Structure formats: structure tokens, C-alpha cells
Amino acid sequence: MRIPTNQLYNQGLSAVLNAQRKLVNVQNQLARETKILTPADDPVGKAQTLGLDDKIGQNEQFQRNANLLLNRLQRSDSVYGNITQSLDRARVLMVQAGNGIFDDQDRRALAEEIKGIRDEVLGLMNSQDENGDYLFAGFQKRTEPFSKNPVTGVYDYNGDDGRNQIQLSPALRVTSLEPGSATFQNVSANRTVRFADSTGDVSGFNARVVDEAAFDAFHRAQYNKTQDPADNALGINFDGANIEIVRLNEAGTPVVSGPFPYTPGEPIRFEGIELQLNADLQPGDSVEVRLSEPSQNVLTTLDTFIDALTRGGLPSEYYQSELKNALENMDAGQAQLAATRAQVGGRINVLQNSIMTNMDLAISNKETRARISDVDYAEAMTELTKQDVSLQAAQATFTRITRLSLFDFIR
Image (cartoon, helix red, strand yellow):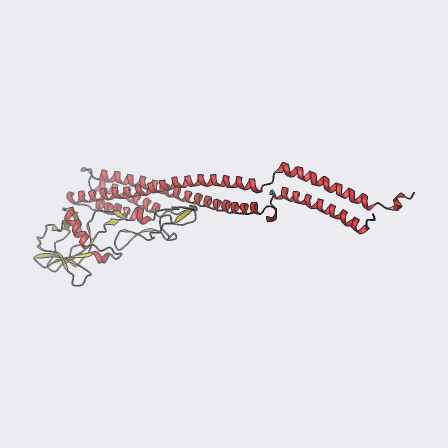
């Protein structure tokens, strides 16, 4: 049978190209380290591989989130630890300040150390991370969270109550840090009053609560939770014989206590609190006082006690009242800080468990992907050798066949 020359060449070329294509396919599998080069090679396997790649990428992001959060929680726990040590030292000094043999000079020496502690704690409360973001400002991370109000003399919180939540798995979100308002600012405090202003000779007073239940009830009835301290102002008005306590900055300045007689040189008592004025009231005089906030910053506790230590000549009963308030307010502040530290510790435990779980999932997903798509090098090298031999055979055969001619037999 006669075989056309064109057909002969086409069949030979087809055999060579087919062998070459198979060889290149094996080479690509080795180069790309996968046996699924296109979806057509294994449609089901390719779909599974894409799904696993997505899971692996998602898991890597969760691990990055976890590492960032762990760094932030550990940094905050270190700050909390330093603040705790400082407040512990301040409380020790408060207890020492109750020593009856200490005179005004000794108290002023203690006040200087407490001032240093106060400034140190303020700096720690305004701690920043490596990016310059404030740790305890809530969502207001570029705003310094704590500062002293020059009008009220107390420490204000300038951040918000926001709590960032970080996703560590499809179903797990962990709160990053508590805002400073929850840890340092809204600390329960003993209620009292503070001097604000006067129309006469009075420029200050000593105050002590003599009936805590009565004054707490009066304070709760009169205090309005507001950012404006003037809204919690009371007036002590003297008409020459009697004293009335009126509500200022309210229509009609309603009387909230009194009238009751006033004796010059004697303390004023009303609704469970006693005030010792530093000057006698004259007819028509008025003294403005402000109700203290039922919660305050722990720094305000330190500031108030520093004032008591440096105020010379403070009578013993008023000093003991100041000391009692300082110790009780300090205990409340330390308890609140300890509760926050416990929350941080719990979050670190959850976080570490999540990191281990994510690592296990990463290993499992990568092993599954390897079984589906990764190339078997021993099998691939064997196939490469086989296809290389096939290509050489096809090329040699094509060369021999294309040389067949009657002229080859003419000698």
C-alpha cells in the first residue's frame, strides 16, 4: 500500500509533539510543585484546593490578629502591674500618715512622695503603643485620655467608652482593652462637698461626714449627673440669724435644707455633714459649695489627700475623716483595677488557646491540600524519565522514517 509523503510527515510530527507535550506537562508539575495545573486536570480537586487556600489565608489573618492583640494585652497588663505597685505604695504612705506622732512637716514630706506617685500614675494612664495610639482612650486613640480639669480640680476622662473587638476565628471575637473610664475613672467614692466661692470673708472650709447614711441620701437626691459642675452647686445663705441651704442654678433657687440657727465660730451641720468655715459668716453672706461626684478618678483621690496633708493646722477629727475617705476610695480604685487585670488575664488565656487552635487548623488544612494537589516527586521523576525516553524514541523514529527512499537502495 502506498503511503503519501505528507501523511508520513504529519504522523511523525504528531508523535513527536505529543511526546514533547507530555514531557513539558511533567516538567511544569515539578516546577510548580502541583499536579493540578489547570481545572481540567482535576475539577473536583481544584475546587477543594481553592477552598483550602481560602481557609489557609483566612487562618493566617486570624493569627496576625491574635499576635497583635496578644502584644496589646501584654503591654496593658504590664502597665496595670506598674500602676498597681504605685498605688500600693501610695496606700502604705496613707497608712503611715495616720500615725498620731506625725506633725505637719512629716505630713508634707509624705505628700511630696505621693505627688511623685500621682504624676507617675498619670503618665502610665496615658500610655501609648508602638504606633503612638493611647491604650486607654477607647475609640479616641489619638486623644490623651486623662487630664486635670483646672476649674473643678478633678481629673477628667477625655476618651470614650468604645471597646475594640478583634476577630480570632469565624465565631470568636475578643475585646481588646477596657477604656480608661471603666478602669480608672468611674471609681466609687465617698460623697462630700467642696468649696467653690463666697461673697464674704470665707475662703475655704474643712468638711467631714458625721452621718453617712443621711448625707448619702441627701447627695443622691440633689446630685445631677452632668458634665457641668455648676449644676451641682449649693448655696449656704446667712440672713443674720439663720442659715438656709439652697439649690443654685435652678429656677427659684429652691431651699433644700434649713433654716437652722447659726452660731459664729461653731461648725455648720446639715443633712449629715459638718463644715468648719475658715471665717465667720456676716449677714447677707453666701458660700457656694459643690457636691462631689459619686465616682471619681483614682488620681483625684490622691490629689485630695495631698491637699489634706499639706493643709496645716487641720483639726484631728477632720484629718481623720480625710484619711478615712482616702483609704476607702483607694481600696475601691485598687479593686476596680484588679477586676480589669483579671479580665485581661482571661482574654490572654482565650487568645493563647485560639492561637493553638489556629495552628492546628493550619497544619490540618495544609496537609489536606498537599494530599490533593501537591506533586509526588518520586512518581513525577519516574514519569519525567519515561516521557523523555518516549520523546527521544519518537524523534529517532521520525528521523529514520523520513529518510526511507528508493535512492537509499541504489548503490
